[in-house]
Amino acid sequence: MVRRIVLLFVSIVLALRMGNSSARKPSVELNFGQRTLIHHNGARQNVMKKKSGPNYLKGSDDVPAGMTNVKQPGGSLTAGVGDGQTDDTSAIQAIVDHVAGSNNNKVFFPRGFFKSCLYSQCDKRIKIAENIFNGSPNTAGLHRDHAVYVKGFDDLEVKRNFARSWPSNSSGGIKARNGKNLWVARNYLDDVSILLYTYSKRKACLYDGLKNAVVYGNHIVDRTNYNGPKSKLGYFEPHNAGKDENIRYSANVFEIIGAVRNSTKYACIWLTSGNLSEHHVYTDNVYYGTTTPVMLEARNATASYDAGNIGQEIKDLYNYPAYKLDIPPY
Image 1 (spheres, rainbow, N blue to C red):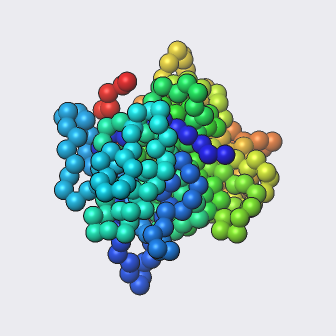
Image 2: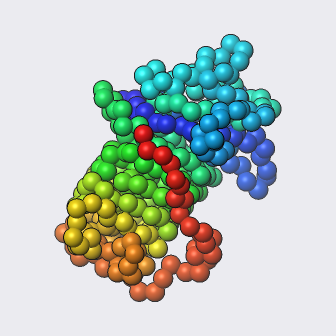
Image 3: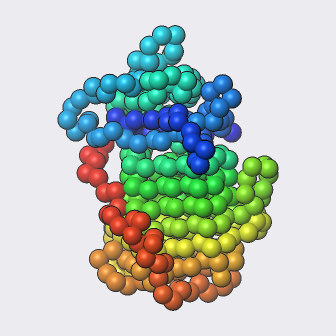
């Protein structure tokens, strides 16, 4: 089933890097609603999706030099509409495919509502950084799913993204499953969750479990679903299959906003299944404005904190604040 989402793209640049090296041969799939790989002439390209700057605050949609505007792609390409009603999937896919084979290898998304999501399957060396995922409240008649959904990855970094207005449940947030070597760091998630999963391995390219994952320094705001197991941060094995190995959680801050007298009574990290001995949660996961470690939950077991800390290497690597932006509401 194809999943649709109305997403406000605000002057976002999609850069397709064509260069390969013998040491690193990156590949990625970026898919706006459909589940097919973005290839050009059989080649797998490295795609970095990064915003240019919030120039909607300046009242300008000027297209930077050397970029293709999805609303005015030129030639025989069909333009994306971005009106929140039109399914732009095919148009955007064709534009990305075309741009991947040209020297003008960047795609520019001006202001608008695009039915789309960021989806990646079975690719390596992916970086998703500095994006604005500002979900529209105009969701009547739409099935909303994750802002970012990645699976079968090897070496994936999701860092410094801003996300808002996705459901605070299993349909929302950043979802990663059946992969290895994952970093989710310094994202600012306003009522948006981080969901880690292991499913049954149904494709050869999927990893049979989740291995070597770091969830570090994210700021997660919870406004609507305080006791929901999928409203903040969690790991889940719905099929009781696969193997979870070396998953670490550190320096995440949980801000609970609303009619609550004591935010520290709500669990924030849910390890509902899996091998708890492979989930290393450190005491620097705290409630916002405090040094109080957050409550942990697990299924049919007692979750506990690890002694020590995640290590200086990770701290140095992500020694900067979460990606909190002043984005005007709808």
